[in-house]
Image (tube, rainbow over all chains, first blue to last red; front, side, top):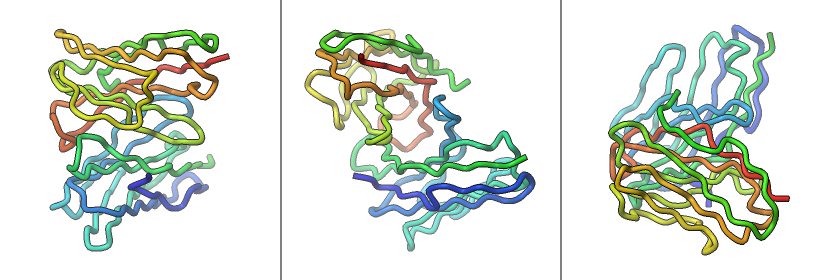
Length: 111
Length: 114
């Protein structure tokens, strides 16, 4: 079963625009991690945010976490064509060791 | 480069055969995870090892098995392969026994069963 559900499923924007992707989850978490996957390639770790954190930044990435709403968002500012990829949120509930992934968001950035 | 190394990158094999996928975790990481990614199932957790011991089990078929060796590398064995086993298999590693630290993924092994 999916713990994280990303929204929207697909997003197409113009280069230079900001991209906002959302993730909702069902049960309490210890942390939430965002990953990027270029077509057919490996998963690249972007950011980990813990349940006691509300916001984290890394370069052009900003992640927020609202545990009361069981949701997280990933903002990519000033997007580039190279940001075109699938983005996944993954949650650690602490019940076991695994990360549970959502189905991913396909982001297309048009040059 | 995540530091997690997987071999082979691509593999084509026939139904009924057996294959072994190999993973070297990041230096110093004791946890190794295996995930399967397919179009219909998405990313599914298969199994985790920590310092040689099985730590957690997910949706791993009985035809599949894994182990982690004393040097911490891991192998995923897939036997009696079926067409539906065609997928991208990821290995990931972490310093932590639990999921509380960053989990780094390799580039994956593409398995095609024909």
